[in-house]
Image 1: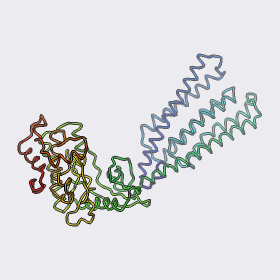
Image 2 (image 1 turned 135 degrees about the vertical axis):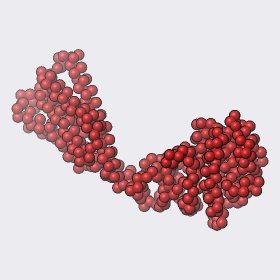
Image 3 (image 1 turned 30 degrees about the vertical axis):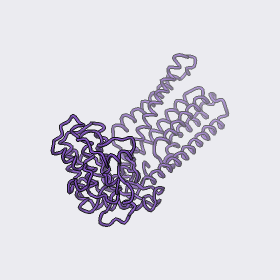
Image 4 (image 1 turned 180 degrees about the vertical axis):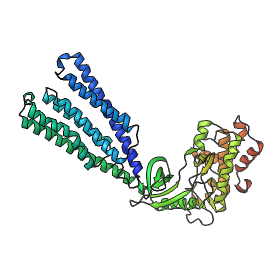
Length: 468
């Protein structure tokens, strides 16, 4: 059964996936069979002496069979939406038709040994291709491959009865050989399906976290990997952040849980929403959050260059709203930077900013993890001077400094300071006055906007705006 190994896969998803794989298999089979038939006919034109006496009949049967395979591919699997029951029937009928075409061609060939064993090899190739392409349980593979080899087995019996003069071996031995080889092919196909089906189930189990199924990795950071995921019932796009067991130390787990708890408290529309949190049976910590299908500011500026002032103001207003809520709750982000601000389309509204990654967040009113206040944290290009000289003094004004650096980057396409090393960049944040953004971009920068950006970039926290 297609995708039966996934407990959260709906019947419709299973149906769609099976039809997709059957479509691929039928395309490969039809094209390869047609190519093989054309090659044989071309060979007979070049070497007429190899043409069998019944070549016209054999080619007519083969051409009719290939045409049927093409019709099933193009006329059924690609044009219609079939139920699971009908897809199972098409699967069986397709394999039976393939086997019947080869069996009839072999029966009318005067060179029985070559024709029968050639048909057997071609049939085995198609059976094994199905094992690799079409999701199937071992029992279904046993049934379908048996149906597929049945016409060849019947043809061997009819040849032993009515065409003994064409056989180069004792008729009973000929029948036993064909049936024995067919049984072995079926057994190999069944075991192949059992292994592949088991691997698919194992992979699916590994990609399963409660009611969430991981679909694809979309990012990775210091706190773990992020995957696009699907909820079993709600079907809404979801992002899952994982903390693998290999990374789980006491401090790391504290930071991860703090990130979840703090972000979940924030309800501003420009802050990423947290849906769920949990731990898998094998020890993987995770939390589910709003899936953001957009572009981060870092990538946007690299792609499009400096942004017009009006757009920068629009983005900054939203980020300020998200930071204002966090600061009012006694939380600071500590890593505001372009890569942690995404622009999304929400409903029909473009350029909706979302602040993400509160992994370095610090709770001002009650900070139990003193280690956060004793080390330099953040990104050097956007770090506030006080975070360099006195990490324990980091507060809301530090986020505003970083936001000023983000605004500077959006307006100019360049960072406030450039340096060969992170240490040199941190020193410049502490000691060097920034060049006004209007001097580093050809775009007009309103005086009021530039004044606010430079105020945010003031060296002393008290010289910056009072709040977001």
